[in-house]
Length: 177
Image (cartoon, rainbow, N blue to C red; front, side, top):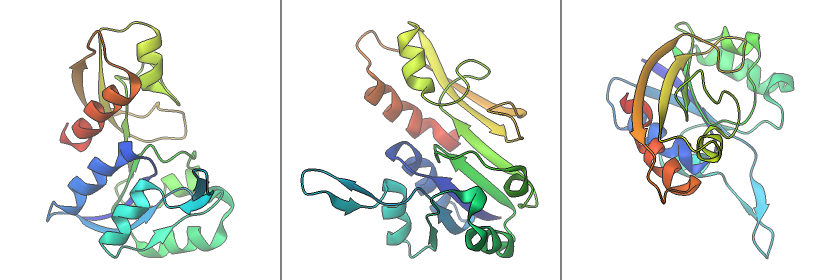
């Protein structure tokens, strides 16, 4: 199955790595946010997803605004992917993009939907004192985290868990569910 992966932070890396190590999937390219200046020296630093993609010699697209980047949209269309897999990409995909892959777009979301749709679901779970959370794998539609849910995997939230700890646990759960 031909896949285009959309993701940016460290949270998305385990899912991409799992796809790359599964023979049934051919990752044909990666879409990630543009490199950013980081640290005291303001060194231009690639995203964690881009770093992994480059170690596998994958094509990488980094549009500022994917909905408006004609070159990237054309390349995505020409890739003729079976599916787009989206994990913490950081931009909303237009209906035009959602309609490109033959089988649709799948999102790995860092909460048990429908609770905590949108950005920062891990932080919101902690803020609201939840005792458990998890990952929801879902089909994407034009709404914000409103598509049909495919799979859910639950995990307890420990008394001393912080957002970084919980994100690490959830990221490793990613595409397993």
